[in-house]
Length: 254
Image (spheres, rainbow, N blue to C red):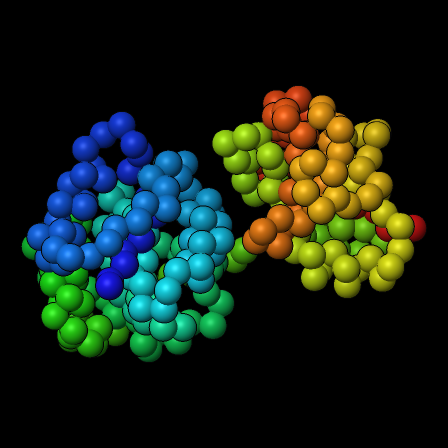
């Protein structure tokens, strides 16, 4: 069974996703299409990278991951196709993939052929036809001349402090921070800590899950994708604590 996942900023209101799926199914009639999300903030490749990185490895090997974020608005962002870790990735050359996969070999990334003659949906359909027929990706275009790269926003680390950034606020208002458990523990060195989401009343211990605290209380824990999350049990942490994307969380160690 072939699986194709879709991660886009196309939105759920318009016909763009249906158009994309129609072109895919014309080329790949028996494929299973999984919608990761179509509600990435418009043109936000950082958010798109976050979703792809959080999900792609949960699928069976051989899955095709299509990413359509900031796809239409720059003619230089031509669609690419490549294999990595037994997955196939398709998406624009706008730096998003460099934020997800840090060990890509540029010479193996293919720029899809004939893009000047077709719109994006036809380009995707042609690629899917090739993949469904078992064509090697090297036959779908030519090696990319310039692979766009971006630099991930990293936590600022000193011996006794980490300053990390809110990278996403989910549907429930839970706040996800760009700090992994491994980095946290490396700096912590078994010390006590205080997580400041505002100037006072810090979080002084980690929880395992939301229900480790009373309803209405703040908790902090490392979530299923190993990133620091700040939440309010049965509440909206972003709204109630005034925490928004790109704001800073400070952790002091003592």
